[in-house]
Image 1 (tube, rainbow, N blue to C red):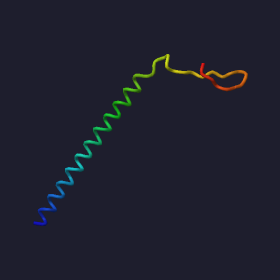
Image 2: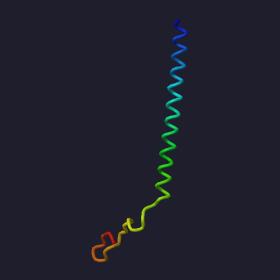
Image 3: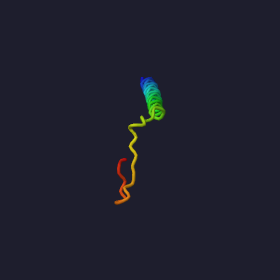
Image 4: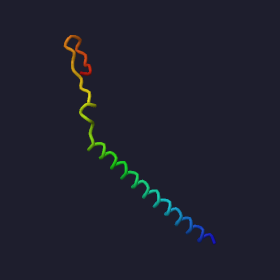
Length: 63
């Protein structure tokens, strides 16, 4: 009986590792797709704030 229990434990462990690997690959793929979609979308021109230097103080302020 102990060899059968060990064999079942090994098979169960392999099943868990396979499931974890597939889940990690799926999550990484979804994250990469989200990152690429954000890069291609870009920000609307009106939402990008630029800074201009104040000639008197030398500080940068939204312009």
